[in-house]
Image (cartoon, rainbow, N blue to C red; front, side):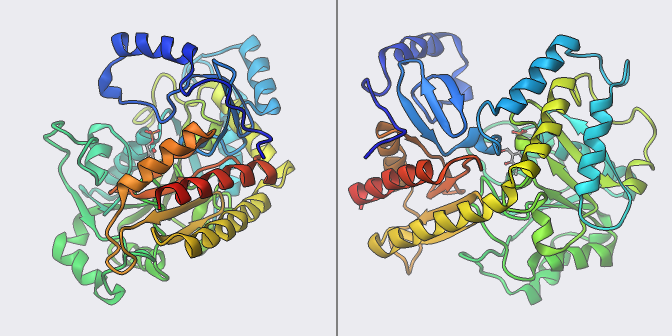
Length: 435
Ligand SMILES: Cc1ncc(COP(=O)(O)O)c(C=O)c1O
């Protein structure tokens, strides 16, 4: 029985169709389509109501930006209060305390013992760009190591660092120089022996020319790939051995999503820099690099920054997101969400052969769909059929993976068990339909 989902019109409804017509004419097609054909009127927790009055359960969380849900009343309140005071100064023109306070909170939460400092930017890609800039300046080296299936953004450098060609790289070259890509041995498709990893690396690039190894502790867009045991520790070890900086991209997996505030805490590793964005300010444009202070302090003042970085609305939202995570015990909630997702998906795996794997951490769990469990041949068409079925039945659920054959859950931690179960029941029916 549906309690939270309510579909009253054809999907998309007439009001959404009207807006879509103008979109076709006036919005650049190169931005691509939206997962939902329905336009949002209101979001509340994990529920989205569209402009036709249809109600959906949202498992996209705005591509992982809404760890505390849509329109959390406490975030709404601090942003409203801030709007009435000032919306912008540029911190380097007239400074404000929330910028400093948020930096302090993020540094205090960071793993390890080295002194750290925070710098803010606008987007995830911008934080990665700046981490690489700082690593190059600090080490005096040009090269960057990245991984297969990685996604780091769409600017010139981060698009180069991103693995997938279409659509991200299309004809956008020439690409940035000195980016080297290595395998990311993961629990489902691991094809190299960790004992050979150092040789593979040193055959590809002279590590003494490498400024930074940029790695997602758990890959997002690439398919929620979990590193094999010992891989992240090995990266830390190789970084120490060759003087390369270890930079973690926690843009999708950070801010409590995996059940720890920083995902890398699961491995008890201290990176040299950590990049954050997405849920950091509940989807307001804000990203951060939390870096060892000896790195940031080695650069000249004014060498990093930007007009909008650390916008006061976003900093206030960011502080409140951290408070909510603590007050509402959302890190514990992430473990419960993981358990519920995995139990349901494993039951589905027993019923449907097309599920090749169930994996993930916290509120970042996926199923990988394959044509055959032995060959592991990807089944992307099944994923798109499931997504379409779910939309028609009131659930927004996204795909991932270089082959688009992964169905991933990036749900808010404020979703109730009942809402999550209702959404999972829809996914179960979708799998029954396409199997
Ligand atoms: C792991 C990761 N890194 C970087 C980015 C780029 O962030 P943005 O789109 O804010 O530039 C994303 C976005 O999805 C991401 O998931």
